[in-house]
Image (cartoon, rainbow, N blue to C red; front, top):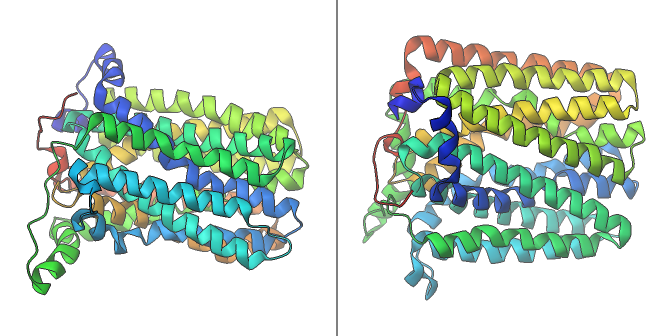
Length: 440
């Protein structure tokens, strides 16, 4: 992992790993990981806004995404509980199949919930999708880290981000188009099929060789150790509290902004088709470019410099939406803002996800990554659900997006301080150092 942190590869070596087996599997995993977010994120916001639900209620629905922030509470179950019959396929593979079926069923259920006559039915269905999607994420993240070699973590993060945006964009765009042509129920049923790539990839690749199963638990004390072990291991590391603080604050502005884009587009008068073309279409290709550039920067500059650059880019991207809000409806302006935001997210997704993956211990991969990824967006999602709608109504979109830009600055400064103090190298776990016999 030292090479990846410092950056020693040439440009040709930076591109070749994208065609290896592990990173290709990470692509499929990312596709399935991204689509539930679209179902309860942008698409649900569009559906509620079109049904006449007020802004405060629409943004409050983003609180269902908090299931992703509390997934560490049940991640230990996926680490240690064996599923009858399916366990013969392996701990990770069996949970991949079970969680995939769970998320498909919950998305279909949300498709049949109608917000206008009974908004509480939609709330319950959205919460169920949030829990199912978070559970799916736990196993997907753990499996991804374990099938990748330490030197593949950066490329694997890039491919996972490719997949995540492909899944989110394809499900988001398909959902909007099918909702226009038929109805939202048909849209959600069709989009539930995006859970299949991860399930198929797990069946093809099989149980990861780098997986370190926890010790057999024979007593309540050992069970308690299995639950708290991932957290004890993390907080014993040098500078753990500072690292956790960075994880929590680095994405507050970005999360706060991203979960309100559809409200801006709706108020500016964009149609579903226009949103699909610019938000999903242009954004998709810009993200692919950003992920590729991020992978090359990661290989050439190393983890630390690439993360710092990406944090700066993501902060500036929020400013572009303040400019769009000030200019009013403009197809060119929307394409520019969406394009830059997705490019910056692509560059950032590679380095940041690689760093978070490297923080994991192979004994607790799923549980520790669940904690890390949950902490990364909990504040932004909570603020979005509780205050974003009211802030937009009070201050307007321009000042709101300027605020999200300012909120990104503390994360940039904190990471720079961590670099100076040597905490980046000191904080990584065995996922960044131990090899396995998993084929590339």
